[in-house]
Amino acid sequence: MIEKALVGSRRYWGWVALLLVLMGIGFLFYLRQLSYGLGITGMSRDVSWGLYIAQFTFLVGVAASAVMLVLPYYLHNYKVFGRITILGEFLAVASVLMCLTFIIVDLGRPDRAFNVLLYPSPNSILFWDMIVLNGYLFLNILVGWTVLGAERKGVKPPKWVKPFIYISIPWAISIHTVTAFIYAGLPGRSFWLTAIMAPRFLSSAFASGPALLILACFILRKFTRFDPGREAIQTLAKIVTYAMAISIFFVLMELFTAFYSKVPEHVYHFKYLFVGLDGHTTLVPWWWAFMVLSVLSLILLFNPKTRNNDAILGVACAAVFISLWIEKGLGLVVTGFIPNPLDRVFEYSPTWPEVLITLGVWSMGFLVMTILYKVAVSVKEEGAGEAAH
Amino acid sequence: MGHSVVNYTLTMLSDLHRALKKPVRERHWVMVVDQRKCIGCNSCTVACRAENVVPPGVVYIIVMEEEVGTYPNVRRRFTTRPCMQCQNPPCTKVCPVHATWKRADGVTIVDYKQCIGCRYCMAACPYGARTFDFGDFYTKDTPEFQPYESTHSYEIGNKWARKGQRSPIHNVRKCHFCLHRVHKGMLPACVATCLGRALYFGDLNDPKSLVSRMAVHYKGYRLKEDLGTEPSVYYLS
Image (cartoon, helix red, strand yellow):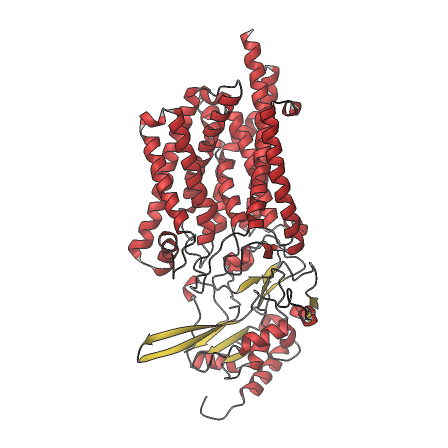
């Protein structure tokens, strides 16, 4: 089936070429990072995780969102999702690949990455995260590819694949729960030490992932003969709406606990986001952008008139994706380190090489997504063509 | 205590020799920091840098300075912070490759041959006691690179020279109570150098040791005790 990714329009190849160029630039800067060390990034002894781990955290959520298609389709027999379930699974594949790459890119000694397998440490949440992420990658490749292959032949998917589909549902929950546990179990990092970390992660995941899927569906509908179907998109939009609302509700819960209790170590981190601390305000504009975009997206999503309008729905989904990227892919990780455990404020901003490497990994993920979507859409176009005859 | 003239250094050295005769398991190395005597000179930080040949950005012991009170009743308070060598360390269990652990004598160390540099332990430490070796040198971009920056250190019984990509570069590093000195019968570099005699080192399992007597007599407190980490550094104020 992969040969279908090798034929395409000029626009397709132009997009692939652009991604390859960005990947190449990122790779060149990664080679520089390998020779120079992580000193090339903006990370420091105070903010010891930056853009890389933040992207990893955000993308685990995007990956987990496949379950929002798989669950209604396979558990509730919601047929409308049948046509796009594969898109969710392939989005998960691309996202998990990005997650794993971001972890490798963040290692000081990537040459020793296999120590994780050679010296397994069940006490470490990172060890479990590696297991669930690789397992989820395997499940989605297996299920996605097998079901698509059956569809191409015009037969039902083989029976043996069903158990893997059912396993993938709780597995999706596990990847984001375990990722939340990386943060939520650390004493002395009060910004992360909260029991609703995993619920927060899951709710934002189920908003950001489906939002990206809706945007992908719009693009596919415009440039290919594949139509995901209006009802599928509208159902996804409702999922985004409620997941986003719950996600923002959870953030407000955190704000109440911090600001009503006035416990300094809980207040400081949020204060840093809202107004800055000791004159340090790097993240303040980002945080306000998150709030404006999230409120805007909720208004557009809850109002049926605007939600039913595809153009406005696209804007709302972009607002959801960007705002949650700010919240998870920027704010959550970095702010946990500010102020530091000694109550001093040392800020972080990524360096250019760091940004370009990050962009390179994203391009790699989009390339994988493009290739997989090309295959899926070609198979579906064929099927639609034959049905018409 | 405190009334008679005591040579603290000799007392600590004889305590140390007594402890070294015991099996490792029966020792519990602790530090006592007398904040009333610290003059904020940062000698401990400097001595540690020289002893462990640590680069920019890596630090094992710092002196934190705070202003307490309001004018005219104001004073400066110094809090010297090595690794707390917690008896219940949050940093070791998060390591995905068994590269850091608490020894039987209570000191938490890093295995530079094993560490993958993921820095999870840095996020887990509530005291900011761990730092990452980003591969910097003080004289890197100066006309002449100074070779002393690549001389050997003897952390945890091994010889380490910072060159090229070799460990400990790109590893997480931390205070190890100068075990390489202690095992040779010497005090940690910071304690040996302390001008105001604000730092003390010894075996808490020995009730007769100077550190045991001081921690009990002056009701030593520990940092962030509410986190349940059971630090091995006691403060007197």
